[in-house]
Length: 119
Image (cartoon, rainbow, N blue to C red; front, side, top):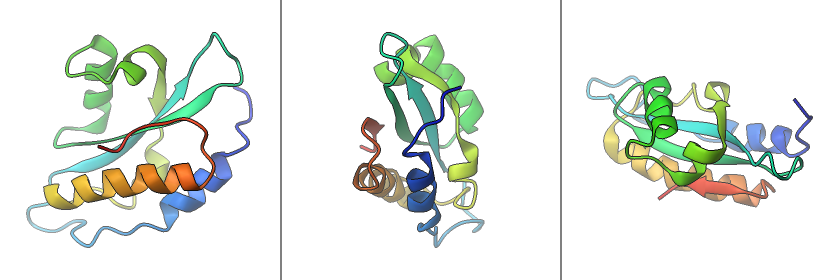
């Protein structure tokens, strides 16, 4: 795979987050990040940020199969990047929704040129 110049900045941006409810009794949700690549343009790489009550691997498979899918992940999803968010998961639902949006914003600010998700 090609070296992605903005990936170190994306890692640093994710490391700045903490989940107050991580590991708590009702912590059943996760945030996840998917690496995106548009093969029509070799230099076009990006990230998708999502949240789920399911296992992120299973949720990624759903995206790829088209079930409740983000079009970007279905068409351009390469694989999950669990190392970016494993320190946050699992957490409570309200926090996963907040962190999904905050992570997407932070990744944009860190210079990731193509960020999807973070609703």
